[in-house]
Amino acid sequence: MKKIDLLFNNTTATYKYFWFLSIIDKVRLENKTKITFDELVIDMISKAWDLIQKHDLNFGQADSFKAQIEELEDIINISKDINTQKLKTLLKQRKEAIKPILKIFTLNVPYRFLSPWIKFETNEQVKRDSKLNLNNPIYQIENEEIEIYPDWGSYIKSNSYDLKRYTINQLSLFLETRNKNIPNIEEKLIHTLLIEQEEILKVAESNQIICPFCSISNDIKIIYETTNTLSFYDIYPVSNGHTLIIPKQHIENYFTIEEKLQMELWQSVNKVKKILDNLYKPQGYNTGINIGKAAGQSIFHTHIHLIPRYQNDCQNPLGGVRGVIAEKQKY
Image (tube, rainbow, N blue to C red; front, top):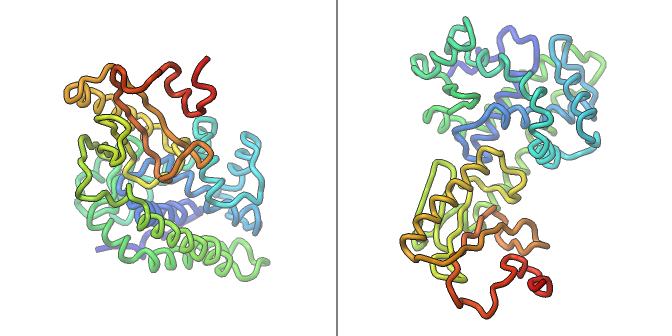
């Protein structure tokens, strides 16, 4: 049923290996089932970076990873020694500037990856057939986004280590034929793509245990919800109706959030504002985000404050959010 052993048949480039490794990490580390092409490619580049920049591995003539990474260095100033997480953050922040590079990796890979389950004729045909779920493919494709089918999501979560180990083994066999003078290739891959990622997983799982927004208490009143956002009353409100709007995914820094999710968050703010208008009839609002410890962030899961304001609820409201630095409130 799974056909994993057919994934890398007749492979002439590394894209499928990194595509699958990125899917595994997105499902396991971030608990995602809907993943944009751009998210996966940014993850792919981050995984390939060390192997090319630090270990100088040759990915083969048919593979453009090295050329695209060199072009990235020309577009944005990146140190070769940058760590994986910082690289991901930087690529997300500069996504629009590097869009042409991201596009190169998604011209064929999302579609040809499904060849064990769907016979490839054209991208549009694979996209259409993926939605029929006739041969149990890993995902369906819609609008430059994949959606993992539920049984595959469960399978990947339960077998993520073994799936990654298998993929790394296959990738090492592919690279060994192209790097005959470089020893211990599989060890390099295991360290970069498996051991380091397992450490990240431990941190992520630890964060989820202590993050109050990743496991909302039953006592919390949820007032609005979308596919990727949640809105609920602050348990320490500064006014009646004080609401928090959060992404369901654990993301510490607002500025690293994909633009599409940022838009969904602010659409939720607008919806919640209408709900609060009806319930509390405030005369005004403050809204804002604390980003970083220096700005007062105490829960490191992005959250937008929407605070209803009322006539005479404080002595002098002049300056509003300028009051975060008390001596600057009045001007």
